[in-house]
Length: 91
Image 1 (tube, rainbow, N blue to C red):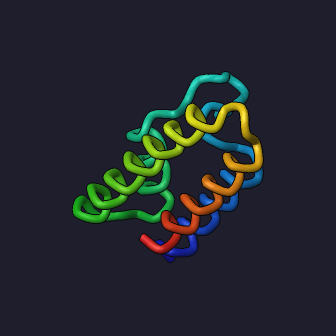
Image 2 (tube, one colour):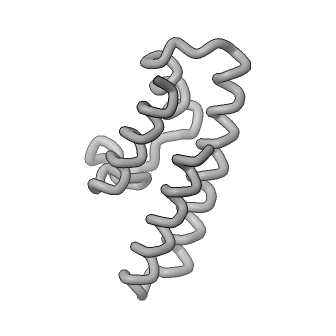
């Protein structure tokens, strides 16, 4: 079930509801907010929450780096974000 939620979360990001576009506010959701939401849906224990928090923190940090580094090259950004999502799904 944990993997299914991660896959659905990744699919949501790829579909356009990504970091920086949360709820139409233009402000990024915090790692804690995203992790808490996922944890509540999956009913994770503390150890699982900590692991998920670490994964989310790393992914959002890397996603921000990619978006800044490839701001002028949409195809490179898309490819790098897709690769990041594949890595995220594997974790």
